[in-house]
Length: 109
Image (cartoon, one colour):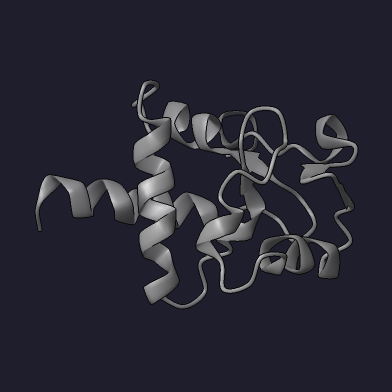
């Protein structure tokens, strides 16, 4: 397994642990994995995750709670619809009550 795939697999393992109805950020995952400057690599991993099953990539947003990865989901509002089906409210492409719903793997795992 090459280094990139190993990192991607580690990202997927963390994302699988994000609780239903909660969100985290690309940066929080990168920091938890010991790669604080690798937020974009986390995003690339999640973009690649659409080929896999059971990776709740919709639960990962940017540090401000914005749905910056939404264009990687099937429809223009697919990411929002997936989050809303879990009870996460989204307004203007941003998670409402982001601070309350934020899940930090460094604190939770």
